[in-house]
Image 1 (spheres, rainbow, N blue to C red):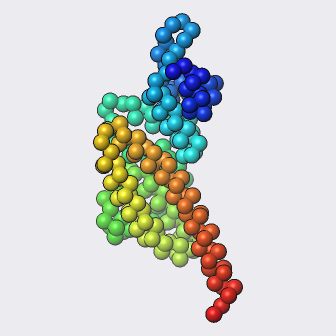
Image 2 (cartoon, rainbow, N blue to C red; image 1 turned 60 degrees about the vertical axis):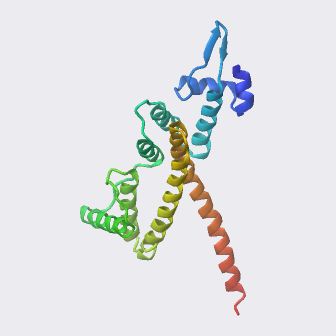
Image 3 (tube, helix red, strand yellow; image 1 turned 120 degrees about the vertical axis):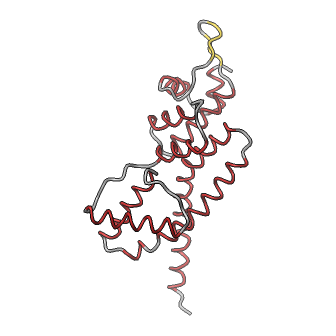
Length: 214
């Protein structure tokens, strides 16, 4: 297909397609004559993946480029792509608290992982964020919220099992890699959206119950 048809099928304007190509997100089309370039179905699929990561996942162009470079790497592994995707969507946690407070938070995070049977390396991009979160809760004297971490962990554990079970059922390596990337990037957005929907529902129910005592 020509670039105009690619734009119509994907909803991505022609100038944006050219921009993605210049930025290294989209492979160039095949030049069939000096002024004509043809694109394949794989380009349409890649454009949809790019849009999902940028527009729904909220990633930067540079982060998307880094992830797609690994997706295209011949040495990629599914487990390795999980780490790449996690790093791409994780913000660098600003270090806060004293050394003693951070050490205590590290111990708490390790205890949480043990309670849930997790084998986690400190290099995991979520680990530093978890430690800083614990430090912040304590700094604000909100141990009541700190107790919620076990609830979060239980839900996260069930979700991780379900997500990776789906990845395991995908028959091709390409499909598995895409599932890991989308599951990580869009999964974060999905959980954030669902949590907000659930909070409104529960808050409304509780407010209604408080307004109509038995």
